[in-house]
Length: 378
Ligand code: AMP
Image 1 (cartoon, helix red, strand yellow):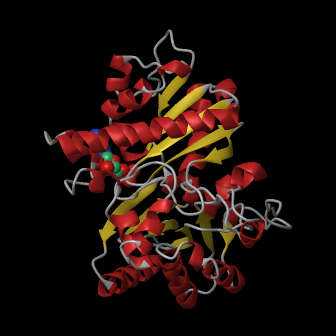
Image 2 (tube, rainbow, N blue to C red):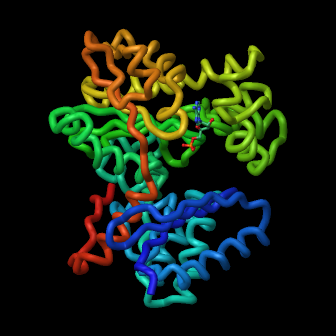
């Protein structure tokens, strides 16, 4: 009999990522990213995953689910009622939620007694004060749930978990901004390891400029595209989600930061510079929510690997006391601040999958809590 394992699934709109962990040690056994071209590709991949559940003695499955709405403030064990609740949130994340839930349903159909847990991108942010969750919209829309939810929660949760060992308790308990800079990008302000504010809002479109997404934009722009150019909601969504960001600003050269950094084209440089400016502005904005800043942490594909991008972003934040040491920065940290700087700066590799494996492990190991922790309704 092979050792028991946990399966972690992140089924997205163009890829399925999965990771298999040893259920005793939480050591990573296997990690794969599958590119999905069409429905047939998804069906085949899901079949393979179901087979994996049997072949690799999987004792629990964790799923990345983008939206947990207002109610789910912690990872949640899946049953029919929870799945129905999460399906009802699809209008809030139409591009992600159905993909995220599909494998959970398939596993539940085939292995009804296998424990499964949903890990929400939004859950980590439910600790934010009410004011930080509000848009300046009519109250009935707020009451209906048009709020700032925030995303990338598993990544921030992981960073919050490892920060004390890397930066010490004082900093980890202090005012920290984490910049998750990958193909999706956001920043999160934390105090005492808990989310206070974030740049992503109602959807993962808000905030920073990203690989193909706009980030924050004047709401007048979609109105212009609709009223003056006659574009449909679908076309506008495609522009904002798939054809903007690094890819759009570079005139289509690439959504990949490495390609842009290596390109001599002025459009590529402009895209890179705008990305850094957006990131720095959002970091500076979040210092308001924290009343200052003790540490800045860079993570995800760009944040972990690109000294040039970190240097450019920190260059915009010198007036706040953010300075980096060129050698430490080039070596990718973990500490990259200059001895003279007043703010600690770190590079920390994120691990969303491991965070999710820990969640399914906790669900299986621990007796069921009387009630999952719920954020107060706002
Ligand atoms: P992620 O979504 O976290 O996997 O991050 C993907 C992004 O990280 C892409 O834009 C990559 O180009 C970028 N990336 C990965 N390695 C590097 C690197 N060495 N320098 C700059 N960007 C990088």
